[in-house]
Amino acid sequence: MTCFTVKPYQKQDHFAQLGESSGKLGYVISGLLYMYLIKEDGGLFVKDFILPNQFVLAAFNPQQTNLASIGVLQDAVLLEAHYSKIQRLFEQDHRLAKMAKNDMEARLEKIYHRMESFVIMDSERRYRSFQQDFGGFENGIPQYIIASYLGVTPTQLSRIRKKIKNVDPLNIGK
Image (cartoon, rainbow, N blue to C red; front, side, top):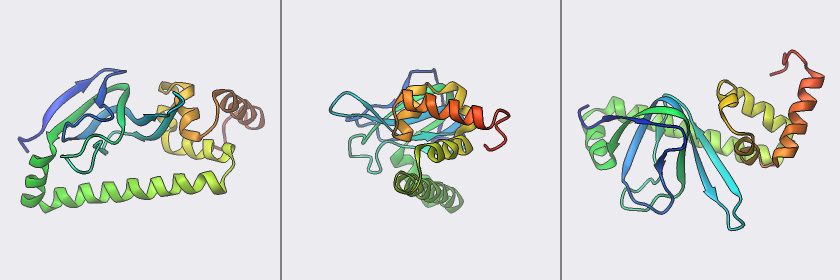
């Protein structure tokens, strides 16, 4: 697997920027990244968080420009490779291709679940779901980013947190 290079990233660095074309794929060894867009009104739309042991790419087609920006929320170490080299590696090692396919399918299912949550869950339940998925990283994520991911304002998120804390002071219901 010599096509991979180890690349450290510091908080606030970017793995990818919207509109650029890098054709690279990464595998997160440590740290936390997030995929986002800036809306026309200047607001933030957080699409997803990328955790350790997950693949990350900003465009499915390496000839296409990145569909989102991917920023670093907590210092990270990634294995990086150019997507074309990964494709050749997938042809040689079907186990690696299967691992990547399984990761992408799981992420896609998670994205569908998140989209459905906006219809079937209130904001408190979406926050509790966020805690289940990303609770170990929550303290390192700014409140406005979590709020954007949940589709609420930072003020609404503060109220949700306060309500949960008052109802469940030991956070037993996480």
